[in-house]
Length: 140
Ligand code: DAT
Ligand code: MG
Image (cartoon, rainbow, N blue to C red; front, top):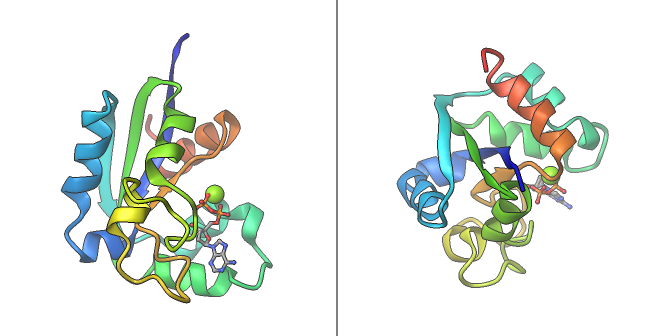
C-alpha cells in the first residue's frame, strides 16, 4: 500500500509540559517519518478552518482559546497507513478514557473536565489530512 501523510499537532499542553520530543520519539520509533515541522501560535482564522466541523458546538470556544494559549508544534508525518496508525498511537479523545500506552493515556496531565487538553491532534481521514496539511503547511 502507498505511503500517506497525516497532520499531527502537539497542542499547547504538550509543549508546556516539555513533551514535544516524547511525541516525536513515539512517531519515529513506530517507523514513521517526520517530513515537515514548525512551531507557531495559531490564529483564530487558522483554527476556525482546522476545526471547521466543530464550529458552533458547545466546546468550540474553550477549544480555540486553549489552542491559542501557547505555541503548538505542527508536523507532517508520512508512512504506510499513518492516518489510522497515529490515531491509534494517540488514543481516545478523552484522556481519562485513553488507554495506558497511548500518547494521551500516558502524557495528558490536565485531564478531568479539560477534554481539549489531550496533548495531540491527528487527522481522522485522508480528506481531513489533505485539507489540514494544506492549511498548516501551504508551501508543501
Ligand atoms: P479528536 O481530537 O480525537 O479528533 P474531535 O475531533 O472530536 O477529537 O474533537 C476535537 C477536539 O475538541 C478534541 O481533541 C478535544 C476537544 N473536544 C472534543 N469533544 C469535546 C467535548 N465534549 N468537550 C470539550 N472538548 C472537546
Ligand atoms: Mg478530530
